[in-house]
Image: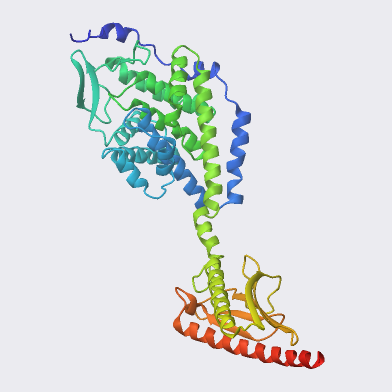
Length: 468
């Protein structure tokens, strides 16, 4: 069965007009101590940051207000991450908008333009007029073609008249299931005229901006002059007065919706203070948002700094320090393996040899080179002979790698404590060990083994003579 049609006459007669501003002011108070303390932050901004940073921070606040005002009305859904992405225009913010639906971007852009219009009204210091409020409605609803109307036969979509006062009653069923009355159609123009006169009165113009914003917002939603979009218009209109005072809008996020509606319901019961407190808190939130945004804009982007930080670990050739060290380890291993092979070729029952890689403490004597980050590693080569011609000799080679390696820079094996060196370019070791390097290593090892054997033979001959 069709739903029972509400009694329009009863709802019209139940309309409770918004209070005069004098009554509103008499029953409310603004915590000016907190307001002044927070505003002191903004007043310090020009000394601490550039005006460009402040401009960017104010743009972030405006975008946050614009994206969430539609979400409060249920036109689309947002979450903290989405609001942040759109407000800060982070990477792929337009893609995030597109994922919400094809209508979301036009709605957001219309709402953003409406806040620009409000800013223009504020900076030009023009008195609020009915014409300006109708233009604001037209701007903020520009992307909305229809609105939903609950009729006796169910919900219907009807064309939304923009910039025009309502032609049909727009009383609503509240979230608590009760009917709420707004201004009847026939007295809406008169009520809007009365609201505008209040907004242009001397007591109103002398009042605190939070009190002004809360009153203007509440007066408009009590009248509900338009077929749809009244909440969006009220929030934008309220921002006119904070724009005039502190050059920023009031950011009311979707997450505040429950507290927001509760404060409005309390105002309907005559407790205006809760709504004034709500507007104050959201204004202070906005001040903090702008302040932190200024500081954030003024500082370097952490991602950019992190990328630059990584360059500290890259050499001029584009190698990481770990890659350079790994190349050094590969060189010392190739040389150690070649020593092991040659030692096996010369060993006899009386002549022995060993080679091993051992940790070692040494420092670089070469300004352009360093010890590997994991610590010094030495190649120890030993040759010794048995009695009666017993003798032994050793060579130790330390590994040094270039501090700022290019492909043409060399890795060094240096005889310790000081002595000859064997070098290999990085491009001989990366990405693989070159054949030429293998040949050079073989020649180096053969020569070194030959020199060691010659010295060992001299020592062994001396020992043999002494033992006779």
